Image 1 (cartoon, protein in one colour):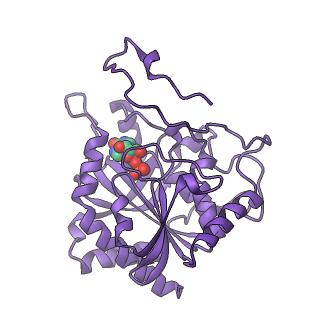
Image 2 (tube, rainbow, N blue to C red):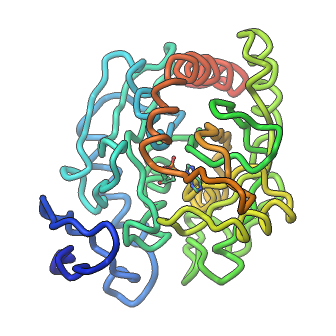
Length: 322
Ligand SMILES: O=P(O)(O)O[C@@H]1C[C@H](O)[C@@H](CO)O1
């Protein structure tokens, strides 16, 4: 597929000639066989490739959100595998997403971290955004920790707060866009998976307790996340609508990853770093921007690294991992 030519945008506000070649993204909605998602066998090939590249057998997988790639820097004896080298893997195209898997030991627990996730707005269909989660399952991961950067809608939230995700609203799913759309392979999970206990209750309790121990209780919240397709940030009217239906934080990821993880019976914990305040009034001049998102990630990196690595050890303890 030919890369998009930014020069065709001539005349639009903020136009500047393309300085670099845009990444080539495989935007195919299907896998070429007319069905959504790669087959179990194809993903098993990807899993076998990864298992052949390292002797580490992770039981916990971590997805690093925008600007949160440093979560993987605490990993000891890292084995880094760039996405370009992994058969059937998409590539990362977003600034702040490195684009590699990091296998190693976090607080003594074998883990794999995604330094860079895939988003719908990059051009990938939802099933492809979540492909790494199924691959994690096939290499033996039992618990998924998904992190993201999000705008704070709850008026009590401040920039830099950490929100433990209690539940989500699958806005894209309301319009029929679901990563499980298409034929179902029972080897991954059931046709109609429940989603009412998606975010593990025990993990959430542990995370709240740990926040007290670390003295960061005042910045740790619990709330409802939603994902929109992006890449534009939301309008005032959209944000007010989301607020009305009970959303505390809004982002562009995670929901579909969690659906895929729960479908294949992984346990899930998720947290949102509140990187900006959502603008819900026409009187405010503020505008969300990706640089601010990345800056807040950097500002909170030490706390997040400590929090996530301790969570990994605590989750592993109650689950008897490895
Ligand atoms: O990958 P996440 O969900 O952390 O990234 C958020 C949503 C957009 O990709 C980006 C906007 O700044 O940050």
